[in-house]
Length: 76
Image (tube, rainbow, N blue to C red; front, side, top):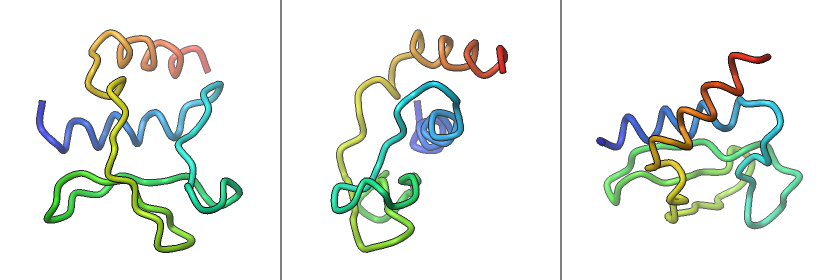
């Protein structure tokens, strides 16, 4: 799986209802983190401050989780 695939999975997750979004480590009231591929690889960025998260949770690499997430989105 390439970085663009994982980036799309994160975008889908952040748009899903009924899941806790990935949030800023400085202020959880900021907008949701968004994925971006930088020189150092795929990271999560806060649109409201300089917070950068380099850790991508393992669940985004799990095909079973992604199928579940897609099923959740189809119920909405």
